[in-house]
Length: 428
Ligand code: DGY
Image (cartoon, rainbow, N blue to C red; front, side, top):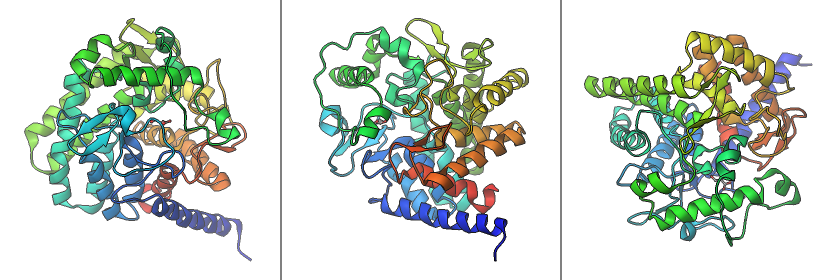
């Protein structure tokens, strides 16, 4: 008879094998789709999280994932949220709707939080492959420079579509989205593939605005200098900025390892400039966490979302801010069976997309950041809850923080990948 610890190990090994199977099934030519049913193309931050997990089990595939994504960097430096490398059925909005990209590369017209730099650093540190490092330096530099040049005046970057933040229907976007009238937008959604999913995906009210913003960008031929003045959604998203700070640090580390000290220093300074801006403009003492900031109305978007805790990933909070943030985390976000819900405010909806469910990617950003602040107990709880959810329900897209029930897509690639990252030897 095996004892309980052995049973636990056995379950974990089985789950790791299943995670590898999910990633292999979702793999296409040089990249991995987030979900065969819901998201059948390459997604920007999904691929980065996937590469983080793959680095420990199949570093060559991880390197390819990163390089395939970076090969879609636009001439101006935008790294698109979606790359349509191959045709696939059942997704709206597809390449014709976006009408964006360059040469033969069809993409969406927006970006996503640049986790790719962190993924590239992890691949490099796992493989020690200097050629890989030397190949990714230029596209990473062009992309992070694009955020600074096109999307920021003082180092804090703004997003111009909720899809760009990755947290599509976060309650934090309600005010900026309420302010504008999408008009009559005709389109057909493709994401409600079952009655259950219809209750979990963003509402039509949100979708009307997503599509209207998309069409406005397309009208402007995705010209940032036009959209900077006309786009009604211009939000300094706290998660994107946290990831950006970390990306600048990670690019600096890659430059330093290549002996390019001046470039390394430049990106360390950029990280610090963005940190300082965030501390000033995105910190809410009332809520005890960071918040996003509306550039159109010049006001904070005061909603308690998990994004407001993620600045720890970039080493943003001062000691005093961290003390408050830690209290908010343990009081409000740990008050559930499973940490950490995506949102804990008045409109909490435990089964709806980014309005309450737990997601593996935000948990990973949070857990990594908490370790940076030596908050070991809190980090251990986030990791243990994440693994328990996947052990119970499989690699679902998101999870109800009260019951633990899996929601959204199944066989979701970043859930599988981050499970591998958390249970890999170097992560223990
Ligand atoms: C979707 O289609 O729901 C995606 O979240 C957009 O990135």
